[in-house]
Image: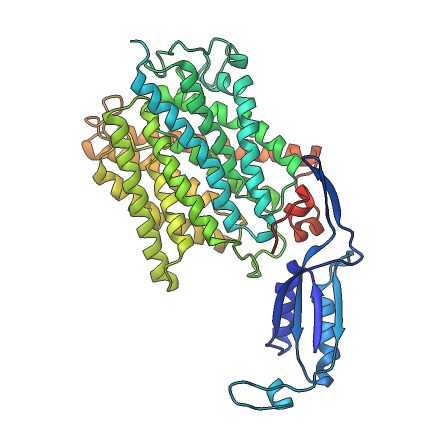
Length: 111
Length: 407
């Protein structure tokens, strides 16, 4: 499974690029995150606020092992702006996949 | 004649109704924009209230309504509201205090530049926006208001009719919006299908506030309570209803679904179109004006998208085209028996009114577009108009205001 935390404003590009390469299924969450991209501090009516958690989007996509690095490359290219705050990609193994409708398991269920 | 209590109450209430339209417009725009720019649009509309009020009190009102200089602009005799007191001004509104009239006009001066915000939404620097507000209000709004409404103004002298601001408010802002969209250019990612409206709920709420406030906008433009105000109120409501229906049905036939944003946009298009006509036409004409506006503005919005101009929230399609249709419709449907201060239109055998209307439309299109381009180019050279690409991607809420709406 590939977990990518990216800029919300790049989501559309990433989705399109994955689609074009034949990776259709994915799950997307709105998340807040903090990395090297510094936040902002400011004062409103006597209170100091700090925004160090910035809005991000997390994509999860499960693919066959041999496709994993292709997917990573696609996400890397389509999510990048070159500025701090482009996000990170993590890869984890998946023990089992089951398609609920048919009960298929394993690689058949991943497709 | 002296001050009339009923008239004063109605125009003061109307001023308050029109004031509420600008935050309503903020909600309408915020709902149409992406989530990361919601606050920036509310903020731009809200600060317009404060900024234009100060400009108007200092010199805007005097330039628009002060003693005419050759029919082109008012003088500065009323700078900082000197000579604008409780005594009525018989030229403009003989039965209400002059301050009430000034205040009612102020609310129009506020919402007009605020309408243009939709054209450059999601990509303009806040400081540059403030400069634009002051410059546009001074150099475009005040002169056009003077031409059309000021005593001695050349369009007024021509006999062209604009009951509540179809030309002064909607054509001027709508055409300026198109010019502004061309100057500032498209948003990053425009056309990729990623410009999802943050909240149709805000759009409906904003449209409801606009509709509500418009009773003051058009009804209050009678500048007295009574039959004329009631007639304008009726025309306003019927045109909004007809246009909400006709836009929704057109979209339903064309795209297969009756969208809530279509209903909201249609209502606004109808309100825009009936604005110049509202005090000169009866309810039958208002229904026709609204029904046509819904279809026409729908077509204009689609045409705009096809050409690929990023007038992001369709100010030109709704206000520019709706206002132009309204000005022409006034020349067609006006009926002097409804308002003796008006004139008969084409259908009652007077083509000359339509001719005057067309001159007013052409002059407003040409002047608004030219001046907006000049103003924006100058601001761009002086301080820079557009945020950096990375700021645009992060959104204006965080990069311009250090605030955001939680996802």
